[in-house]
Length: 176
Ligand SMILES: [Zn+2]
Image (tube, rainbow, N blue to C red; front, side):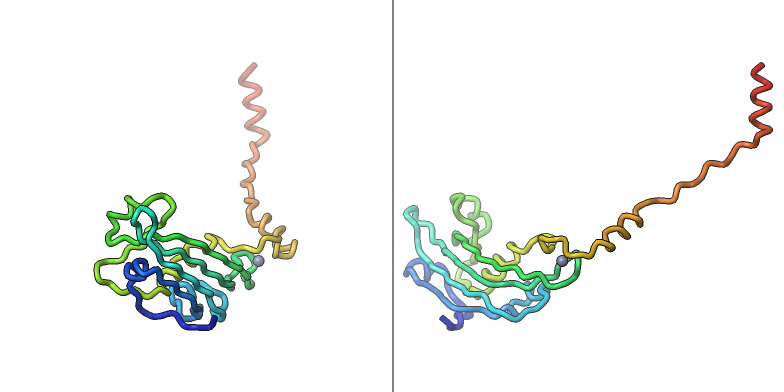
């Protein structure tokens, strides 16, 4: 399975005819995603099954597999993230129709007579799967780094101005 995906498809027609797509996409060609990658070599294995369900809703059942190279926000080294995404997208002609889809589908909005690049929907799904803050699971920084971070948090306390002994004395006297 080393075939290229077509650049333009009509997903509604694919659903009517029950088409399947299999192929791979180079990560480097997904420009929105690759901008947030540590390294953009590698590919996504893509499998898409188009069909119409019992209620007449056209949909795409997708399975995307890849390994992304991200940057750990703690140690700034490479973080390898294997991803397997299974998704069911309901095809709709307009955003307003997305609400009518049953809960099992996420919407895939395709305007009338529009041909779409299947790579775009794969890229969207991968971006959605990215962790908000990528971090190694283990503590990936040396211990010293944690200590110095703690010290930076401690604020110097401003010492109270010492009261003059004479002021204290006069206060005591006046109370008698
Ligand atoms: Zn790390």
